[in-house]
Image (cartoon, rainbow, N blue to C red; front, side, top):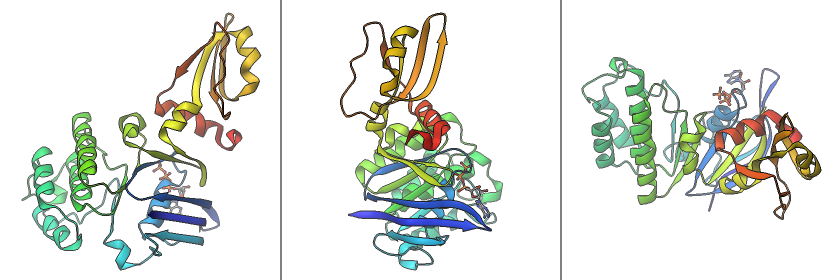
Length: 289
Ligand SMILES: Nc1ncnc2c1ncn2[C@@H]1O[C@H](COP(=O)(O)OP(=O)(O)OP(=O)(O)O)[C@@H](O)[C@H]1O
């Protein structure tokens, strides 16, 4: 079933086009990444999906319903942002009680095990927590809600590398146990990208790419070799970056062809990590299209 549908969606605030004519949809029960530079529009898009913001034009459907101010959609979507998710004077114990009543699929066992995993003291108020602990509370709520759609918008601010690793691992295991739709926006791309089935690359409010993660890795790669041989093949690709030094060179390419290219004898194809892929693709922006 299609879980999110965007048709010609734009968002304008004070004459500034924040989202510009977005068109995409995706099937339920996938983990997808929303990626892009600062200010590209990821949070705005997530706010629209979560029903916090309306679009200025176009149609948005979440589970076939318009999400804005729609209570039916609200209980099915858990939106965890990078901070200020909960009232600062609320104790964790009170928050747990509220979540249990609000989210229909709330799993208390999962919540308890996450409290233990992150060493969270339920008698503490949100304002008494460190930044990383507050983020861990957000992560605990997001996972335990087991909402049909869970949105994590850079939810790990202040969490150390160990805590982040525990989070990704727990999320993946829980997703395997109870598949659901998870939308994840992050700048720590390499830490999380192995979870993504699909990525949506947003650039200046527009959808630059909407692609399976494996396919993106196949299309964007580096070629190294003698400059002379690189010159012979480079017109077959969209070049994202080019460097040469003392007769040798490296090009980063976006390979849009259907068939695999035969590399010249002395040239080598090298895979890139997802972080580098996204940096190169967003640096070129719409020139890659
Ligand atoms: N409430 C608002 N009022 C006016 N402009 C806004 C508002 N919220 C966001 N914007 C603008 O919308 C654009 C997109 O912002 P958004 O927060 O969606 O980007 P982002 O991709 O999530 O960025 P980041 O990676 O830095 O979190 C930016 O130009 C931002 O200044």
